[in-house]
Length: 212
Image 1 (cartoon, one colour):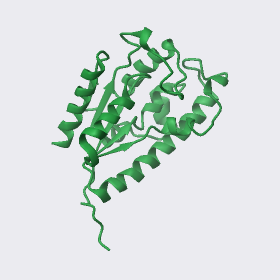
Image 2 (cartoon, one colour):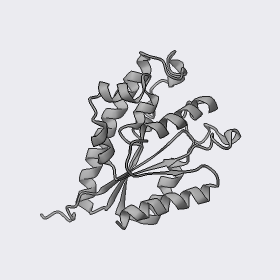
Image 3 (cartoon, helix red, strand yellow):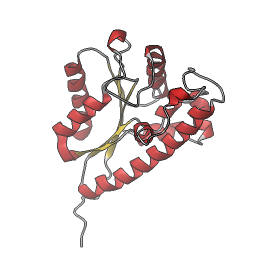
Image 4 (cartoon, helix red, strand yellow):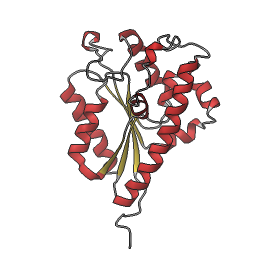
């Protein structure tokens, strides 16, 4: 039986940002707006933390910002990266099969570097990642700025049971998430503020890739 797929490799978008940046809401609206033209890759860390793993705040090295040799962070990010690679590979195959034009990743391969104790350079070295190749893996990086930047009083954990950061930690991860993708050739930063405006900007950015 012949495949119904069109056989074209989909373009790839990373949607990233600090904690409480609105990624989940934006991705939901992208799916509703563009339907099966887009394939959504779920966030690897959320999938892993949803598996009844003990909360990371229970590990001594988790709450600390950047702790060289932090064993829990290193072990966890190793599994996040492995899971991310498998998710992208599997959904890329399915996207080709069904003829989807774009694959949107809820975080990409480098996002773990924002949580890696020794930072991006050591992250790339440890996992033998060529940064140029990783950047070229994605056609666009959309960075949604966390609400903690402009309205820290609105930052919270209630809508995400796998969010463990406090506002100070969230602000740090926002900065580092932005830094690890700074070398990408096509990055769009969408500022925090009115969520309707943020969603519209994210939809427009996706549309430009869909129509390119």
